[in-house]
Image 1 (cartoon, rainbow, N blue to C red):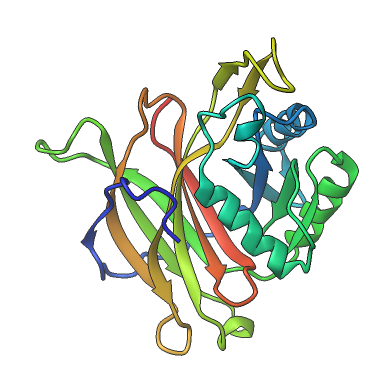
Image 2 (cartoon, rainbow, N blue to C red; image 1 turned 45 degrees about the horizontal axis):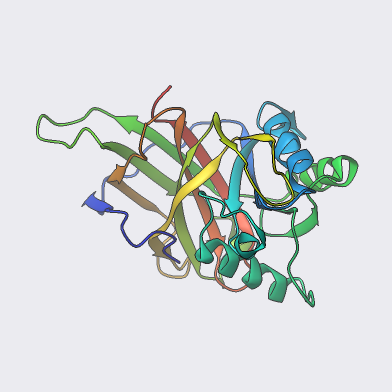
Length: 258
């Protein structure tokens, strides 16, 4: 799924030699479906910021704040929202056999969901997700070339060692460009008069490759990715997600700007 059609993403080397997989900390992806028009969402936004600073069950947390658009007609249009995030949440609702979508909702590694402000359940669900076998994923920023745009960055991505338990599934390698330390002064709607602060706001979410372990268990490339306006506190997150179950089996992130 491409979550921003304007995002320019260029594969510079689709089949680089495999990098040596080094031991490292696991990562769990926590997606928060939220909206600035929802009065119940700020506590979940704050919990996501807290999670991003923690190691839980031996795993670091990759925070993805995905702002849905279905609150926008109720008085406040969330500038970070996208109908494509709403569509992604509906896909999860189908996966979890839910009758409808809601905010705030956290989805942990694509495997389970929780009310986004339910701290106890979120923590226990992350601890459980961290126990699952996972692929090796690495992403690093690499040096720019002289003719690169100042609004872009180069990253090197490596996916390796997909567990044998997933050999019959197909996966998408997804790239999220996120921005932290952003805020909005909300003038209307349920949060009127409040300043809302967010972390891990997804500015683009793009499928960069597909992997079918029966054919290949490794993917590596150098990618040129767009940087959002302002460039502040920008990260690149790579995660590997099953097309069938939507489970995320590996993830990593790197800082693009401070």
